[in-house]
Length: 137
Image 1 (cartoon, rainbow, N blue to C red):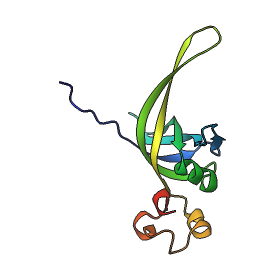
Image 2 (cartoon, one colour):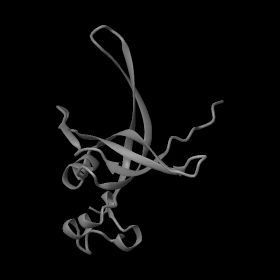
Image 3 (cartoon, rainbow, N blue to C red):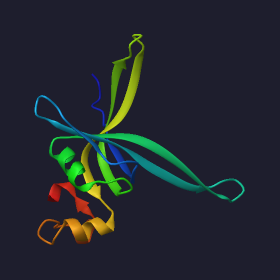
Image 4 (cartoon, helix red, strand yellow):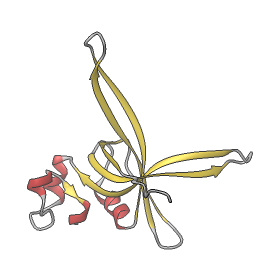
Protein backbone atom coordinates (compact mmCIF):
# COMPACT_ATOMS: atom_id res chain seq x y z
CA UNK A 1 0.00 0.00 0.00
CA UNK A 2 1.36 3.40 -0.99
CA UNK A 3 1.76 6.07 1.63
CA UNK A 4 -0.14 9.27 0.77
CA UNK A 5 2.35 11.93 -0.27
CA UNK A 6 2.55 15.62 0.40
CA UNK A 7 3.09 18.02 -2.48
CA UNK A 8 3.39 21.49 -0.93
CA UNK A 9 5.45 24.43 -2.16
CA UNK A 10 5.97 27.71 -0.28
CA UNK A 11 7.69 30.52 -2.15
CA UNK A 12 8.38 34.16 -1.37
CA UNK A 13 9.86 36.27 -4.12
CA UNK A 14 9.30 38.86 -6.83
CA UNK A 15 7.42 38.67 -10.12
CA UNK A 16 9.74 38.68 -13.11
CA UNK A 17 7.05 40.13 -15.38
CA UNK A 18 3.35 40.99 -15.40
CA UNK A 19 1.07 37.95 -15.32
CA UNK A 20 0.10 36.60 -18.73
CA UNK A 21 -3.64 35.93 -18.61
CA UNK A 22 -5.58 33.72 -21.02
CA UNK A 23 -9.26 32.99 -21.27
CA UNK A 24 -9.76 29.40 -22.39
CA UNK A 25 -12.65 28.21 -24.60
CA UNK A 26 -14.16 26.35 -21.63
CA UNK A 27 -14.59 29.70 -19.88
CA UNK A 28 -11.71 29.17 -17.46
CA UNK A 29 -9.11 31.83 -16.79
CA UNK A 30 -5.43 31.00 -16.34
CA UNK A 31 -2.54 33.30 -15.44
CA UNK A 32 1.15 32.50 -15.53
CA UNK A 33 4.23 34.43 -14.49
CA UNK A 34 7.84 33.85 -13.48
CA UNK A 35 8.77 34.27 -9.82
CA UNK A 36 12.34 34.93 -8.65
CA UNK A 37 13.50 33.71 -5.27
CA UNK A 38 16.92 34.87 -4.13
CA UNK A 39 19.03 33.11 -1.54
CA UNK A 40 21.66 35.27 0.14
CA UNK A 41 24.61 33.57 1.79
CA UNK A 42 28.30 34.00 2.57
CA UNK A 43 30.86 31.97 0.66
CA UNK A 44 33.87 30.28 2.26
CA UNK A 45 35.78 33.59 2.12
CA UNK A 46 33.00 35.47 3.92
CA UNK A 47 31.84 37.33 0.82
CA UNK A 48 28.14 37.96 0.37
CA UNK A 49 26.68 35.92 -2.49
CA UNK A 50 23.25 35.79 -4.09
CA UNK A 51 21.72 32.92 -6.00
CA UNK A 52 18.44 33.50 -7.82
CA UNK A 53 16.11 30.69 -8.86
CA UNK A 54 13.25 31.23 -11.31
CA UNK A 55 9.93 29.42 -10.86
CA UNK A 56 7.06 29.18 -13.34
CA UNK A 57 3.81 29.96 -11.52
CA UNK A 58 0.37 29.05 -12.90
CA UNK A 59 -2.93 30.01 -11.24
CA UNK A 60 -6.50 29.29 -12.35
CA UNK A 61 -9.99 30.73 -11.94
CA UNK A 62 -10.57 33.55 -9.46
CA UNK A 63 -6.90 33.43 -8.45
CA UNK A 64 -5.94 34.17 -12.08
CA UNK A 65 -8.37 37.11 -12.02
CA UNK A 66 -6.72 38.31 -8.78
CA UNK A 67 -3.29 38.07 -10.44
CA UNK A 68 -4.50 40.01 -13.48
CA UNK A 69 -6.00 42.79 -11.35
CA UNK A 70 -3.39 43.18 -8.60
CA UNK A 71 -0.02 41.70 -9.60
CA UNK A 72 2.67 43.51 -11.59
CA UNK A 73 6.33 42.94 -12.44
CA UNK A 74 8.52 43.42 -9.35
CA UNK A 75 5.78 42.82 -6.78
CA UNK A 76 6.75 40.78 -3.74
CA UNK A 77 4.44 37.81 -3.13
CA UNK A 78 4.12 34.74 -0.94
CA UNK A 79 2.68 31.78 -2.85
CA UNK A 80 1.48 28.40 -1.64
CA UNK A 81 0.95 25.67 -4.18
CA UNK A 82 1.91 22.30 -5.63
CA UNK A 83 4.58 21.09 -8.05
CA UNK A 84 3.18 19.97 -11.40
CA UNK A 85 5.07 18.49 -14.33
CA UNK A 86 3.52 18.32 -17.78
CA UNK A 87 4.83 16.78 -20.96
CA UNK A 88 4.68 18.43 -24.38
CA UNK A 89 6.01 17.36 -27.77
CA UNK A 90 7.64 19.67 -30.27
CA UNK A 91 7.35 19.40 -34.07
CA UNK A 92 10.06 16.74 -34.17
CA UNK A 93 8.14 14.63 -31.59
CA UNK A 94 10.74 15.36 -28.90
CA UNK A 95 9.19 15.24 -25.45
CA UNK A 96 9.78 18.22 -23.17
CA UNK A 97 9.04 18.18 -19.46
CA UNK A 98 7.88 21.45 -17.92
CA UNK A 99 7.75 21.80 -14.15
CA UNK A 100 5.48 24.51 -12.78
CA UNK A 101 4.02 25.61 -9.47
CA UNK A 102 0.22 25.43 -9.49
CA UNK A 103 -0.61 28.24 -7.08
CA UNK A 104 -3.34 27.65 -4.51
CA UNK A 105 -3.02 31.00 -2.71
CA UNK A 106 -1.24 34.31 -3.19
CA UNK A 107 -0.38 36.91 -0.57
CA UNK A 108 0.73 40.23 -2.06
CA UNK A 109 3.49 41.66 0.13
CA UNK A 110 4.27 44.89 -1.75
CA UNK A 111 3.30 47.65 0.70
CA UNK A 112 2.37 50.43 -1.73
CA UNK A 113 -0.30 48.13 -3.23
CA UNK A 114 -1.92 47.84 0.18
CA UNK A 115 -2.81 51.52 0.35
CA UNK A 116 -4.05 51.80 -3.24
CA UNK A 117 -5.95 48.52 -3.58
CA UNK A 118 -7.58 47.85 -0.25
CA UNK A 119 -9.52 49.39 2.54
CA UNK A 120 -10.10 48.04 6.02
CA UNK A 121 -13.20 46.14 4.92
CA UNK A 122 -11.51 44.10 2.16
CA UNK A 123 -8.25 43.26 3.90
CA UNK A 124 -9.24 41.89 7.28
CA UNK A 125 -5.80 40.43 7.96
CA UNK A 126 -3.65 43.40 6.96
CA UNK A 127 -2.22 43.78 10.44
CA UNK A 128 -1.28 40.11 10.56
CA UNK A 129 0.11 39.57 7.07
CA UNK A 130 1.15 43.08 6.07
CA UNK A 131 -0.17 42.29 2.61
CA UNK A 132 -3.14 41.83 0.36
CA UNK A 133 -4.29 38.23 0.41
CA UNK A 134 -6.31 36.79 -2.45
CA UNK A 135 -8.71 35.12 0.00
CA UNK A 136 -9.80 38.54 1.27
CA UNK A 137 -10.87 39.94 -2.10
